[in-house]
Length: 116
Image 1 (tube, rainbow, N blue to C red):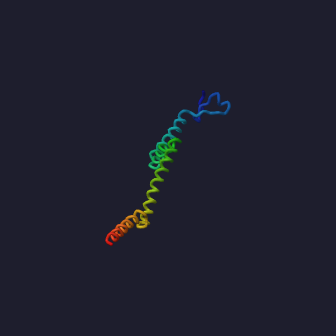
Image 2: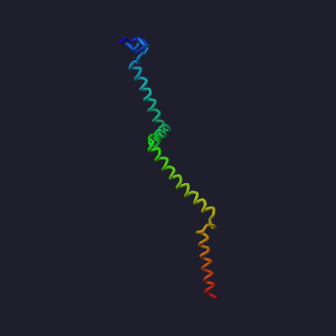
Image 3: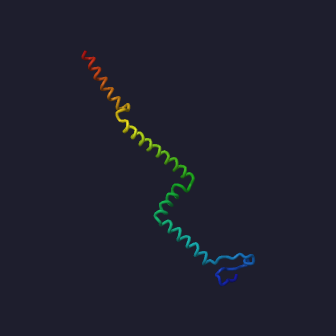
């Protein structure tokens, strides 16, 4: 194996025009990629989105479970919110409110019938 001035190693594969990269250049490239990946993980935005991805989205089974859980929670809380809003808007016109009023009127009617 001979070395040229460019820093690449040449062996019998060079006869076909294929050159191998030297070990130092390979290490430089991989260490740069490692540093870049670590910098991305240390970034707050990258950390949060990466953590969400690794926790909830990476595997299909966890992804489907997440969809089902979020759908269930959304349906439950949206139902509670809309029921509360409906009750607040129609206060005094719903059966629980009217039922109390009717019971009071029936009690007065019985008292009047008892007095006669």
